[in-house]
Amino acid sequence: MKHLIVLFVSCVVLHTGAAQQSKPQSFINAFERHLGQYYEGKIIAGGKEGDGFTGKPLLMQVLSWDAGQVKVPFYVGDDKSRTWIFSLVDERIELKHDHRMSDGTPDKITFYGGVAPNEGTASLQMFPADVETCALIDYACFNVWWVTLEQDKFTYNLRRIGSDRLFSVEFDLTKPIQSDFKPW
Image 1 (cartoon, rainbow, N blue to C red):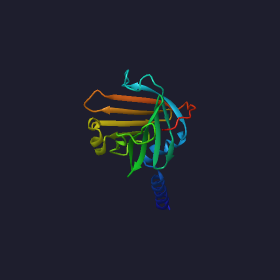
Image 2: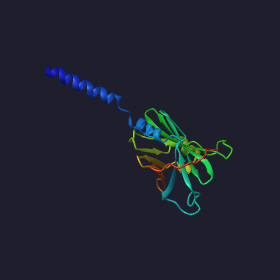
Image 3: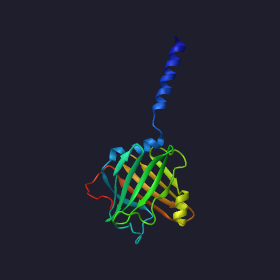
Image 4: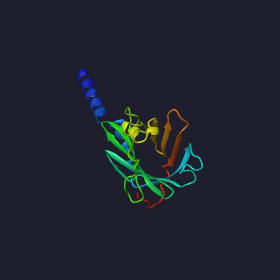
């Protein structure tokens, strides 16, 4: 009887472990509760006058979510050209930057980014520049982006290895705001 109980407990533990979400899937799923919400942001590193971001209102929106992909427009003042796309690809998260012209047509430089080299965590994912990015933007070949998604804040970060290029913006997820902004 004792061995039967141990076997039963072992099976329950194995079954419960199999049902857990992967860290990449947990990261994607953490966006679901923010679907449709807008949040204000602020530059926390790397901002400087004339960079196109400093001094402008910064706003993110979780525009769409499903178990495989999240689209998060990043509005800078009245500029609605940027959307971060997080996709689940082979149990890794891929980040792509979708840049558009004001009429919605693709910019000449768009869909750059990278794939996480490992599973990351449920709240932190890192993305070194991929081959497509290196071909599209040679100076971005040494970019590493990382994103955090915690209960109270979301951060988007960029570091260009071998340079002083650093950019970080943080959004307060405790205070959704009203907006009618939509990309393009």
